[in-house]
View 1 (cartoon, rainbow, N blue to C red):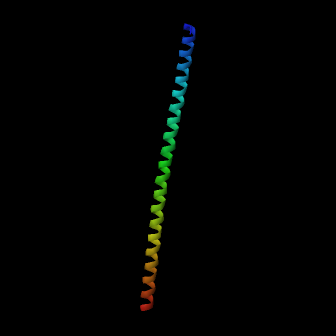
View 2: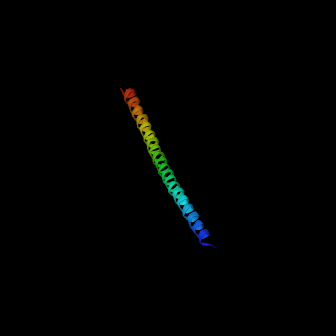
View 3: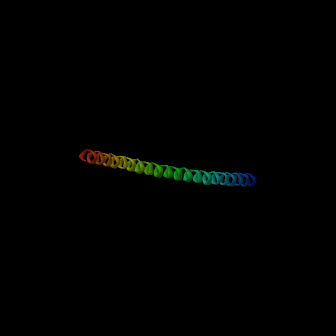
Amino acid sequence: MGLLNVIKLANDYNQAKKLLKGKKVNAIKVRDAIDRIHDYIEELKSAKDKIDTLIVKAKERIRKLSELLKVRKVGK
């Protein structure tokens, strides 16, 4: 290889390295953003499950209170 070819190869290598580095940074940023979004989704699912559980408990308490009121009204 001549000196000119070595310089061209080094130049192409450096350009490819910069291009790949740029893409990796973007890919890493995108992957991190996707991971954060998945974490948010999991947190929201967890919150939804907690809310659903609380709704079921609240409905159960309302049903029990309604039954108590019915028993007291009948008892009078």
